[in-house]
Image (cartoon, rainbow, N blue to C red; front, top):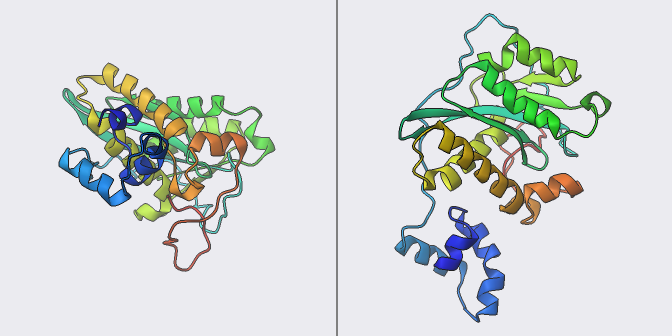
Length: 259
C-alpha cells in the first residue's frame, strides 16, 4: 500500500494498475486489475465521484457572444484548440474558483488560476499563463480559444487579449456540456483525483496544491486515449493520437471527446 500511495495518491485504478506493473513484476507479485480494485476498495482508496452543485457560468449579460467554431472540427495537432472553463471547489474557509485552459489535442493544462471570486481578471491570469507556453505568435499557426458564454470569457479585456494575439474566439451555443466536453472532463479529474484528497484550509494552500496537482496530471497521469502516454509527452512530441473513446456527436464528425 505504501508503494501505491508513493506512486500516486488519487489516480484512477485502471491507470494505476498500468503504472504499477514494473513494481509488481520486480517483486513477483501476481495481481489482476480486478484484484487491485478489490484491494483499494478494502482500504477505502477508490476515487469517489462528486456531483456538481454550484453554477459558475453567468451568460445573461450584454457583452458580445461568439459562434461555435468547433462543431465539425478535427483536432490534428497541439495548440490548434484550447478549451477553457471555470469550476468551483469547497475548502475549509469556503469556496474557491478554478480557471483552467486545456489543449484539446494533448489534454495538457496550459494555463490555470485559483481565486475566491468569479471576477474576469482571474480568467485573464490563466490565459496569460497559457500564452507564455507558446514559442511563437499564435496568429502564425491558427489557434482557437473555445469556452462557454460566461461573462468572464466575453469581457472586453479577455476578448481584447485574444484578438491581440490573433486567436479565434469560439463559444458554446447552449447549455449542453458536450459542447465543451474536454474542459468539463479535466475539471472533474483535477477535483476528484487530486484536490479531494487534501484538507485545504485557505486560498493560499489551495493554489499551492492546485499547482502541484496540475504538474502531476500533466507529467505523470497516463491517458487511455493516448496509449497511456502523459499529456506533457503528447504535447511536446506531437505524438499521433488514436481515437479510443466514444463519439457522443451522433450527427457530426468530431474528435473532441475526452478519454
